[in-house]
Structures are given as C-alpha cells and as structure tokens.
Image (tube, rainbow, N blue to C red):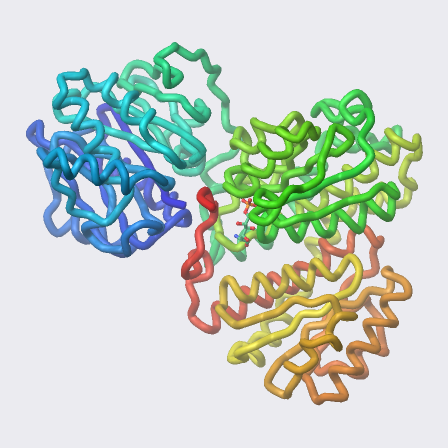
Amino acid sequence: MCGIIGYIGDRPIIPVLLEGLRRLEYRGYDSAGIVFLEDEEIKIVKTKGKILNLEEKLFNDFPKKAKAPGLGHTRWATHGEPSDENAHPHFDCHKSLALVHNGIIENYYELKTKLIAKGHKFYSATDTEVIVHLIEDFLNQGIPLKEAFFKALKELKGAYAVALIHKENPDFILVGRNQSPVVIGLGQQENFIASDIPALLPFTKEVLFLNDGEVAILSKYQVEIYDLSGNPVARAPYHVTWDIASAEKGGFDHFMLKEIYEQPEAIKNTMLGRIDLDKNQIDFSQEGLDLKFLKGIQRFYIVACGTSYHAGLVAKYLIEKELGLPVEVDIASEFRYRNPILDEKTLFIGISQSGETADTLASLRLAKEKGAKTLSICNVVGSTIARESEVVLYTKAGPEISVASTKAFSTQVLTFILFTFYLKQLLFGENEKKQKIEALIKLSSQLKIFIEKVHPKVKTLAQKWYQAQNALYLGRNILYPIALEGALKLKEISYIHAEGYAAGEMKHGPIALIEEKVPTVILAAKETGIVYEKTLSNAEEVRSRRGPIISLVTEGAKEFQKISDEYIEVPLTFYEFLPIFYVVPLQLLAYEIATLRGCDVDKPRNLAKSVTVE
Ligand code: AGP
C-alpha cells in the first residue's frame, strides 16, 4: 500500500528518488519523504500530502551536496494519520539510521513499550518507527549493523518491506522482506530497490525478486541475498520485457482511459502463444497446465478480491456451463477466516492483478495447507502469489497503473475463457468449434472498433447523469458479475453510491430504491437465452416505478430500446465473450462521470492499487 524506492550509486540522488516516487504514487499518496547523505550526515525531507508537496519543499531549499545512498517513500496510512511526523523515512534517537517501510508491524506496541522503557524517544504514531529503534538498540549493545538488522527483523511480526541506511556505513543499503513486495534493480556500478517494476523501468530492466524471510545487501558493485539465518541465497536475475512507455500515459489524460483503450492489445497479447490455429486448439501445456497436474481434480475453488473477484464469478458461469464441474467463488478476506472445505481433489484458483493482495495470498497458503492444488492468474510477473502457486497463468495486460482495474479484468476473463476451452479439450477431448476460435482471434479488433464507437455515446450519457447520488446496476447470469463490476467502478472513482444486483433479486429489496433521480443500468444480451426475457420484465418493473433506465443491450434489441431512457448497443457475439464487451461501456461511464465530477481518477480517495495488508 505504500511505495518504497532506494538507490546506491553515483547518480544525483534526488532526481532518482523523485522519479521513482512519482511512479509509485498510485500505491499510496497521503504523505511522502526521502533520505540521503549530506556532509556525511543523514538528511531527511518529508511532508504530508502528495509528491508535489515534497518536490516543492525540496526545491525551496535544494540540498546541493546530497549524495547516495538514499531512500524514498510514498505513504498510505495505516498507523498514525497522514502528517509530517508520521511520514517516512523514520530515524533513530541519534539520526544515524533511517528507514522506510511498506506493511504493518502487528507487535509494534509491545516492542515500543520495551524500547521506551530503555530510554528510546519516539516522535511518531507509526508502527514503522519501532523498527529503526530496535536496530539502534542492538547497535547500542555493540552488535554490528548487518547482524543488528537481521536480529531486529526476527523480532517483527507482520508484513514488511524495509530498507535502511546508516551514516556510518554509506557503502550499502539493507533490505528485508516479509509478505510485502520489493524488487531489486541491477545496474552497472549502481543498484536500486522499489516496491514494483514500473518504478525501476527508467533505470534498468534487470531485476531480482526477494522472497519472504530474505534480506538483501546492496552496494554499488553487488547485491547479496541471505535468508534470516544469514545463509547466502543464490537468485537469477530476470529481464523485464515491459518498456517505460507502457508505464506512462501515452497522450491520454489519465492512466485509466489509456488502459481502457489498451484492452484490445492486452487481449491480443494474452492470447499470444496459447491458440494453435492449425489444430483449432488452446494450449497451456508450456505453462505447466496439463493432464498430470489436473489429474483427480473434481472441483474448483476460485478466490480473489474486488474486481478480480468479479472475474472469478464470470469464470463460474463459464466452467459450470462448459465443463459441468462444480465451482465455488469466494471473497478472499472471508475465505481465509472460514473453514473452507478443500482437499487434493480441489483446484484452488487465486486471481490477482498485482499478485500481492494480502487476503488472496493468505487464501492461497491456506489452500496449500489443506492439500489443494494451486493455480493463480496474475498480471505482475514474479509477484508473490504467482511464485507461490504450482501453476501461474499470466494475463499479459502490461503494467496497470490506475487504481481502478480495467484491462486486468478483461484479460482475466479472457484467460478463463481460454482455460475453459483448454480443459474441455484435455478432460473431454472436445475441441471448441472452429467458428468460435476464429471469433476469439477477431475479438481484439472487434473490441477496438467497439470502444471507439461507444465512447462518444457514453460521454453524452455521463453529461446527463454525473450529478446522480445513487445508481443501480442490474444483470442476470454471466452479466450479473458485470453489473457488480460496473457498480464498483462507479463507486471507486466517482464516489457515487452504486449497487450491483442480480436483476432477479431486485424485487426482494433494492426495488425500494427506484425513483426518478436514481438511474438503473440494465445489462441484457440475447446470447444469454431465457434470462434475456426475464431481464426485460425486470426493466418493466423499474419502468413502472418511473425509474430512469440506461440499458446495455444486444444490437437491435427493440424491446429494450422502447422502454429505456438511454440505450447502448453491444455487438452480437458468443456467450463466453459477453463480459469483455459489456464491461467496456461501464468502465467508460464511470471514467467520464468521475472526470465531470472533478475526481482524481487515477488516484481515487481512500484507495490504493495493491492492498498488501488485510
Ligand atoms: C479494482 O478496481 C480495485 N483496484 C480493487 O478492487 C482490486 O481489484 C482488488 O484490490 C484486487 O486487487 P488484485 O487484483 O491486485 O489482487
């Protein structure tokens, strides 16, 4: 939830830290700070508010002699409200140590009490400050810095990615990880650390991933990795294929709009190498998904959070329909504290764009404990959930910077479509119809045309409804999760209270919300068969209570056009592809309404891109 960056080398330290922080700001943005050496002293500059405030403070009194090593941090408060004091970096009693942290130290209070009793002076309300005083305490006992760092980490309970510098040891940065993500960037006579890859791209594409319970010592010339017992760990570098452009706005006003328009490309990339047109087959065998792995699987348990959870709900409709096997879908924060019934006949599927969401990660670990087989669908290569799953199917959406997830969702759904077709082949020897595989190949170009065609219509719609206070989204069958996703998008970036509901459930309560100021967005597709008619009756129920209707319907759906105040036509397609088409106008509607309301679309209030604490 916070973003950390660090550098050791000869480049001017301030620009490196600020560049990295700007690329991490979507992870948290209520306060920020940096630390570097100046005249062999630790110099900290930090402030409440966005990176912009920090830049202002620096440029009003620019530290001309600033030198590496240096660290930076952008915060999303958990302990202690956003303030200058609670901003990171934090330092010890003598300002010789400085530390940045992403995560939550659960036993901080107990440690803090002990340290105060020993005379340590605390000035912030954060859990993080405890770590730097703990290290200081071991130093005071004459224990060398590296050992003191290891010892302190062993005392911590909770999630952390920490980085530390010491004025008396300017030749290295110490980094530790448990649950929270941290990536090391390798350079020529310089090295970097960051919470994720996009922050490193301006400097290097050679990275190393740190696992839980590991420590890295970065000097200008090398990176050493150890486990917490001090044993050296060998780790091969990974070459990142993403480029900087993909982590920048490419001429769009916001990352969210850019990422909506990137969906056709993302869909195409996610299919690449997974469709064998000659054999008219899907192929995941290169990714370890084969009969040997699937042997004995009788049910699926899909677990995720937020938008990824909605992709899981779509998968339930696909898998049950095509494979006739039972699928449970659950919210990770509930799954992990229930007693879910899983065993070796269960395939646990964790879905996560970031691959770092704490509740989904914990659910994966619980599923493993219960003997289930594990597969994950992730977008960030080398992320923890991906590395801890037996099989990982990557969505190839590229970096998703905007907090509101869009292209990750459509590529998650696509991955499930491919997964379902593939299992039909493997388990039942049934290839998908050639026509449908051909339509799959055309999906990307069809979607591109649809986005460009529908956007102007959505813009007009947003003009009419951006002042609404409440909204209802209704859908049935495979469009029910899309109604949930549409409502989530509107909620999270425009702050309008929106509810997604199964249309058939409406008369059991939410129908009471229907009134002239509350727009109801209704999704209906002829490809869903009988439920199309049922949805039409639900629309009638809204109409008869004077509720304004915005319907998203299959081209030529006259019945809906007659009773809707506004309608958006969606091209005819195959049942399986409906979610990918129907979600786009809802993403655009939320985007246009949020911009009209002056909301910070890419960094909506109270939200962060990767939720690494529970
Ligand atoms: C979606 O727009 C939100 N950012 C949020 O609900 C997100 O989907 C959720 O936090 C899960 O994130 P993940 O896919 O990275 O695990």
